[in-house]
Length: 232
Ligand code: CA
Image 1 (cartoon, rainbow, N blue to C red):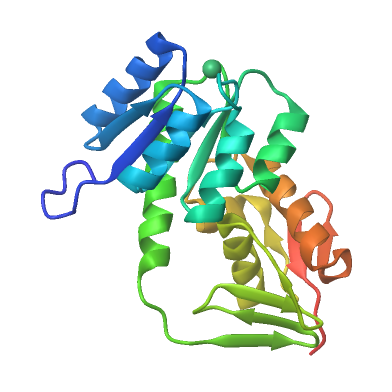
Image 2 (cartoon, rainbow, N blue to C red):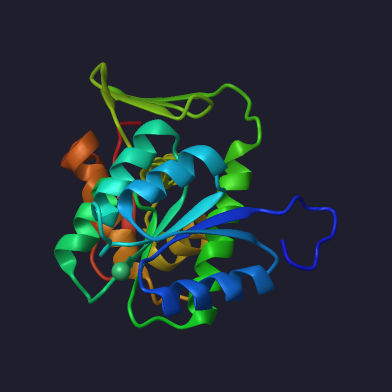
């Protein structure tokens, strides 16, 4: 976005009650060309997301009012938006709950501004790409049905409610059925990350996908990656 005068300016909502962090993040994102709005508590964040319709949200978990997980749940129920969650420590519970309620990515504090801006750029790029009109397309593997244009998934006729990232991950695996895709490649293609430092993020989303569409469909190849195991 930055450096491209023709691209529309993207809007990021930063939700953090620690003022020094919020202002540092906002300043850096503005320097990267984003329009940035701030919210400092749970209710304010939900209201701002509704009113401002941001392209992405940077969301701290620890907030007054109600916490970031609840913000995530409420915002995603109204209008799906890419969310980068900030967790105070490497808290596995926050992380897993966050991904389950619809966060797409996370960073553990303390984080570098370089890392944060890279993640925000990747989130916004994916959101823009996903908003592009797609040809109606339906993938069917046995009782698994993936509707790419409506971004809906049915397993044995029952809708699986996937987060935006889970859907992208499944669609990617389904584009190469029965092929083992390395975690680094999934990170690059689905998340838009150039380095392999976030492979745990892939594992967490695979866990979520298995819970929602059935563990039998995704095979782990230890030390390598994942494959969608479907009948020919
Ligand atoms: Ca906080």
